[in-house]
Length: 251
Image 1: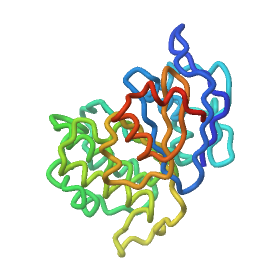
Image 2 (image 1 turned 60 degrees about the vertical axis):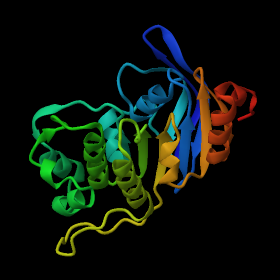
Image 3 (image 1 turned 120 degrees about the vertical axis):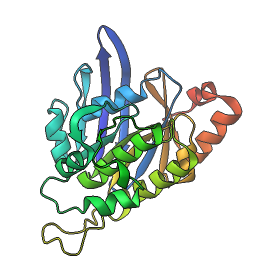
């Protein structure tokens, strides 16, 4: 699903990522651990194609297609979706309309999806306007569910979220990854997607592992991938010894 080879990335004049190699097969969920400032969000933004992240070396392949220099909107249309850690407020655009735009030509029952996320009361509000941290994450998740991407990039989904919202987010993430979206039977367009979905999940605390199943864990430390193995084992070591112990592991 996603293949990154020898990736080097600069922001301004500073090298942020160094020789990153990462492989996420179809249907797998990989967890990306790392201390603050290690380059986790920079890697995600580079995969998505945001400006300001200059690739100086390496290649990004998605579903067999070279997307290294592909514009952001084309990567989204190809099937990459992202949940931001701190998304902006968009004045003049309601959340309902935003979700409809994310759905494109797919027939999605916005009210049904929002009810699932307990977000009914916020659909007519401008995107992220006066929302709490948990409400913003639910809004982002609602948009992702409507988009139904083949690969989801989740930047610290548990950050600033209460326990109730984390449980809802975890359930929604599993819905997107496992069986696609449950659509209204009256919809005539589209089908229920059962294609294998993949995910790359950034986490600092590891709390999201209580709600989703991870196939693999990686540690990004000072711009380099330094460890790759069972996600829960990595999290246990981090809690006991800190990130420095992971530096000695072989990828």
